[in-house]
Structures are given as C-alpha cells and as structure tokens.
Length: 145
Image 1 (cartoon, one colour):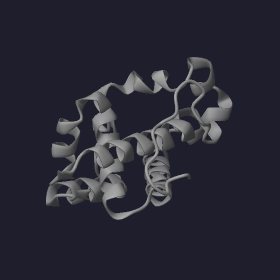
Image 2 (spheres, one colour):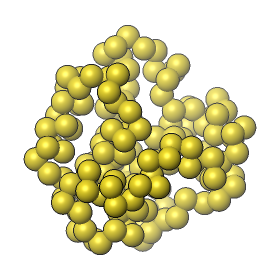
Image 3 (cartoon, rainbow, N blue to C red):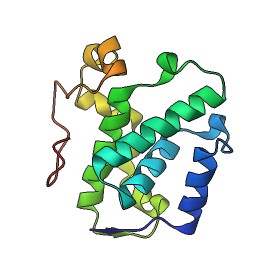
Image 4 (tube, rainbow, N blue to C red):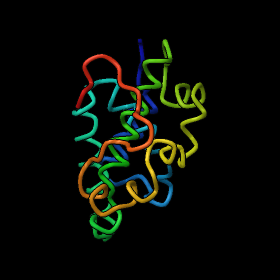
C-alpha cells in the first residue's frame, strides 16, 4: 500500500490543527480526509490520538463543551474504517483521490451496520471506544488496537 498526503492535504491539516479551518466546513468528508492524512504517517493508535487531540482543540476553540460533541467510539471507528479502505486501495496521491476511490465511506451512517444505535449512541461509547456489536470493522495486520 502506497498512500501520499498531497501539499493541499498538508495545508488542510495545518489549517485544521491551528483552528484556522472553519468549523462549519468540517463535515464528514473533512473528518475522513484528516484521518487519511494522519494514517499516511502514523499507525492507527497514533492517528486516533491525533484525531482526538485535533477534534477536542477545535471544539474548545469554538466554545463547545467536548463532552457534548466529541465521540470516542466514532472517532476511532472511522480511523479504523479509513485504514481498512487504505489497505484495499493500492495507492493514492491525495486524500481526495483516496476518498473518491472509496465513496462508500461518505455514507456517515455506515457505522450503523457495525453498531446498533443503542450501543453507538450510548454514553459509554461517547466516552470510550466500544467494539462493534453487530459486525466487526475489518482489521489488517497488527492493528489490534
């Protein structure tokens, strides 16, 4: 697998991490893009940690209580999903190319094929990662994290 973060991806990453990217524009695709960028250079746990830190910083920057908005299970589950699709996609030159090659990821409700709504939207899943209760998220290699 050979994936690259483009110059535009790195610019996007810097803008998000410095809270210069408009939070109102930080949609599902932006979440996928950032996960991809982090996974290009890091293992799963490193990417999850960076996503968590960045998302919490963004929420604090706009004055939103992270406990009201941040969701640990969704954050890690989407990093795992992006990693899964990176393993299925031989190469990509940018996050946009990767996402365009894997449009199924744009369905933000796809996690409901892995989790029941009761589990996914529980307080426990919001605070800490909960494994899927319907269908496992495919894992590759040594990513048992």
